[in-house]
Image 1 (cartoon, rainbow, N blue to C red):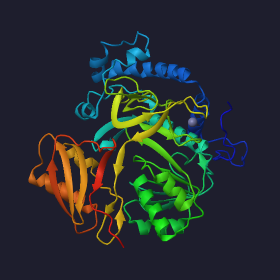
Image 2 (image 1 turned 30 degrees about the vertical axis):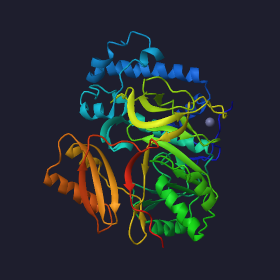
Image 3 (image 1 turned 60 degrees about the vertical axis):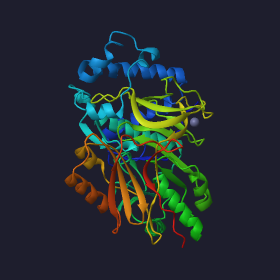
Image 4 (image 1 turned 90 degrees about the vertical axis):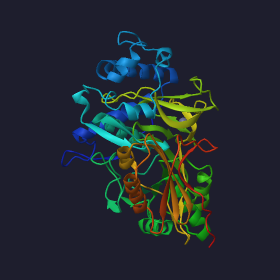
Length: 458
Ligand SMILES: [Zn+2]
């Protein structure tokens, strides 16, 4: 099959007076060279892709056994760099849990990451199960992320000259002339704008009406609240072409809601801060393709066997290129349902559903709704909180459920209380409860914010 092309990309030129063909900036050529390859290898049959994965993984594993104490200790009885790596050998390796990652950060760090892979940086994340972990990644991981982002734009045939607006966590209110880190310096795009997702829904809607973007990116729970509000108030947004979502499990009715509200499709992404993109939506279906070019992803049942299509299992991820802190058979904490091979012809494995983080909106007595964001990552790490879940018990009380080795003292609780209260409108109090584990909901999703308050009628 012929790879999809992107003839309308306006690649930035480093030569004055040259418009076509363009000579890209030297740093851009590396990303574009990766896109060129990823566009082709996505069509390999699964066996060919898996063979490439195992060859690449054996290079990372050899490095891990030689320079990462944790793996030297745990893998040498199963494999040495002189042995060929087969799928059977690989699946005998022990799983790396979030708890291991929390407890063995130093032993999991490579003593000699390749300097050619660029700068090593630390990432701190609470992931989708409220359990904070820290990992190291290299600049090369960042290049792969850019290339996968660009390939996903090709998949969905996005008009990069149009406007992109994002309402999400970790941004300020801003207007910029490029779509962001994956395109900046590489491709001339249309403008982009960002708004913090902490704004209430009506404020967000007024902002979108001023921005009039073609593409709207947000978190699923927030997008559902926006769509619902537009349906209820008859608000049309004819300029919208596509909603893009990330960061939470997709509510079952979100695709239908967005069709009803604005007549547009939803394109979802499944990624994590530790591993980058894990699976991205197929351009021809609502299921996801695993990013097998950057990760080896297994979906296993409770006995450790590979799940067959239709089965739901635990997601286990192995990085292929992280030579600063290889994650080998890392149980990320989410679940997925395995799918049949895709009719689009791509050999990248298929996941039909991801059971990750689910959230409710925070509701106020006056009917205003907020997407909950508490910025607990750093403080959780500092206070030794293993896992957390926040529950809105009433219009004026939030309960923080914590899993800790040692209960917090009064001063620590007070610090946590201040952080939580700074993230919600005035008028709330915070209470604490301690437990040994925070279970998933009946549907298998992990709920990191639950509202037990019914939406008030107005
Ligand atoms: Zn497909």
